[in-house]
Length: 220
Picture 1 (cartoon, rainbow, N blue to C red):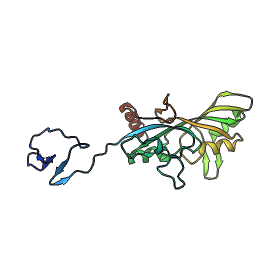
Picture 2: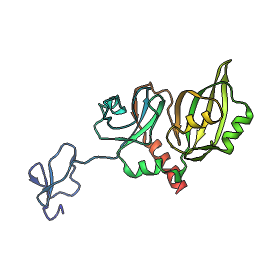
Picture 3: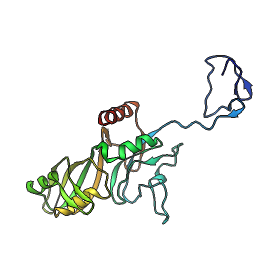
Picture 4: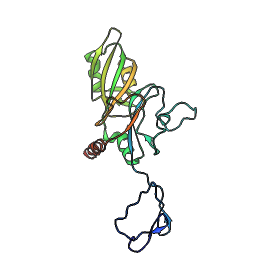
């Protein structure tokens, strides 16, 4: 196309192979038609605070995670959801294929949570979580769960699940008699929240994106 003189950049015909142009800044035409704005696939990690919906917009005008992403130059969408009163790791992307794979139950992507619950679950109840508890939308089980620390009236439990059903962790602990008081997601597959400040976001590194792709390829 370049050799045939079919490419124009900023009003000039380009006939040099290897010519560089920036699709974000330059006016590029092929066969007289301007190329639409180029949007690279981006994925970012947000440390979601409590009090924000994991949606793009809300008809009741409540705060959404998009209010925290005004500096992002691309339109991104949440991968799954975190409850309004939950916090922690939330991935957002404009890659539809990636969103589908990370959200679909068939791929069983692990999600790790730190959960503060009322009381202290004994070993029998934690085993019950691993074997599975009956919920209104079907049986659910954890991959692993163990107590991190405990007090007289509550305890913190580290839990790994492979589903993203609505309010899943809360419903499972309610089923064994230990209501959830706080919920924080700290890992999604190989991606870790780390020390990212609450309410802040960052783009995934190339290595993290590659690790996600490897995980997905392994599970296909």
